[in-house]
Amino acid sequence: MNKKQLTGAAILTTCLLLIPVTSVKHFGRSVRADDQNTIAEQIHTIINDKRLEGAVAGVSIRSALTGELLFQHNGNTRLTPASNMKLLTAAAALETLGSNYRFKTEVFADYREGDHIRGNLYLKGRGDPTLLPKDFDSLANQLKNQGITRVDGDLIGDESWYDSEYLSEDMIWSDEDEYYGAQVSALTASPNKDYDAGTVMIKVSPNPNEGSLSNVKVTPETDTISIINNAKTVRENEEAEIRINRKHGTNIIVVDGTISKNAVPEKIWVAVWSPANYALNLFGQSLKKHGIEIKGEEILGETPNQARRLVEKKSMPLSDLLIPFMKLSNNGHAEVLVKEMGKVVKEEGSFQAGLDVLRSVLRDEGLNPDDMCLRDGSGISQISLIKPNQLSFLLYRIQDKPWYDVYLNSLPIAGVPERMLGGTLRKRMSNTAAERVIYAKTGSLMGVTSLSGYVRSKHPLVFSIILNQFIDEEEMEEVEDQIAIVLAKYKGAKQKG
Image (cartoon, rainbow, N blue to C red; front, side):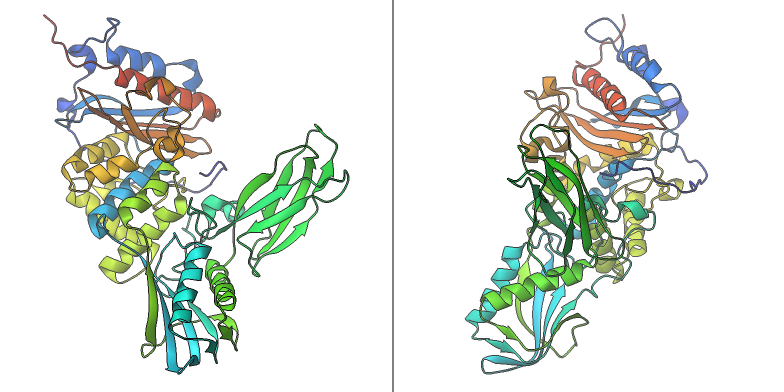
């Protein structure tokens, strides 16, 4: 998730209330908590804490059974949602594509003659963000099993399924080499099963000899990456720091700093420049490993209509992809899904087309997307704006969808330490872990944090907490956790006598 400051002018539109003011009812008028303080009073105490001085706090709480807006504080104030934007993207993708949707990767040839290809071999990407090196091995092995041993022409990577706008419009220059800022391409690859598409993993280890350069390894190995290693090994227990940056517009990765002689290796994920070239090179390595010779070059291009498809690989279904997407808050997955929705619905694999589809889904669910500012699918934009009441309303509305269980299952579960269960909440609110009552999406940017989701209990609730314009993020997460725990302890309404 993005921890750096973004800039840009907020785009404001006219205000439309989702719920009439006359329908708003505070817990304090009809509900008593166990400690005799109303939930409203407890939440007001939390949000009036001095830690929030100078910040803007938006809180929206609804009954998950009726959708009634039970409590709000700045609920109709537009705020930057950070990765809570993924809640909208995931819902729209499930509604548009379906939980069983799979991405494809295909291999085509101009013309086959015996054991070799006359002309070019084409690797056509169609958006799959989960391709691993072993998947390219599998494609190469299938070609080998068909008896192919040689390609007379070039090996061509085709990323034309999507347009050539690789980054959302509010991505800042300094984030482009970070794993969360990777370029979005229809042809890409991931280093491991976190599926951070368009990245490589850099492992820096100390050298046994003090004063020598560190050891640097790139995973997966690829000819598209060049390493400049300036990092030195220093004496045991010496304070040290490794810095890794990719030179803008290149695949030259510079490793600077120091690492202690007794330190454990450091692993850092770095976004590559041109993921399509990266994926194509991995496929070329796989072909060579399986005894298939390429006479020509590895280049990017488009697959001609008359080319013959030889093999294909399908991704995991969207229901499975949502686990790393939402649990680990994967920005790349969000932007791929935006472009894929645009391609499927509007035959245009662009950010704009995909966001138009997202807005259409929101409108169908009774929201007004013209009352929001939606700039991307991941929430990395600090220009995006949404009201907490809008977000909680969407979470309420989708509970009757056939894909809702898939959606809920993808959300981090507070305090559960298993990485693919607790996700970004695995180290938070551990006192709720045994009950597994809080299922929620986190969000974080510089000066922004958010937490929205469900309290799954006898008296279920839907909530959205969005905090903006603060300094200390750790303190703000504590505020979110305090509010969520109050909700988790809610035992239901008790009418005053």
